[in-house]
Amino acid sequence: MTARPEWIKNTVEGATFAVRVSPRASRTGLVGLVGEGADAVLRIALNAPPIEGKANAALIVYLSDVLGVARSQVEVIAGSHSRNKLVRVRARSADEVAASFAQLLRSLVH
Image (cartoon, rainbow, N blue to C red):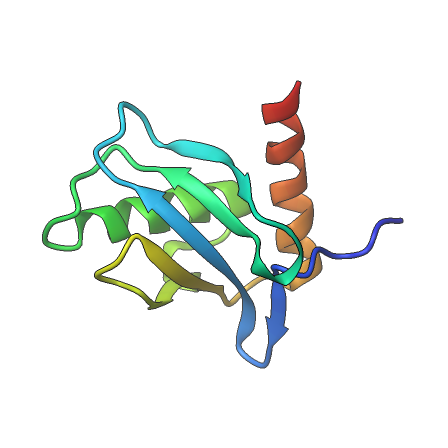
């Protein structure tokens, strides 16, 4: 059994983690993990422009699909007008979120 990564944190309201988005990409998907330890950030490409909340909406749709939760359970809690965002997932623990991302990150390496 592996330990949960430091970059995903449990809070009273759910799991939180940092994301750096690249809007206007050719397709939406996980690019990788940048950094180490508690300072690591998920890089996600979004096929949406960064105007009128479209990139944030695309991020929420992507993360809800990946994590298997309702869109209303995923929330950008900081950085809504920035490429660097803090995301909260209400319906999953940090361990569950880590397991979902671990599968995706392994698939990027192979």
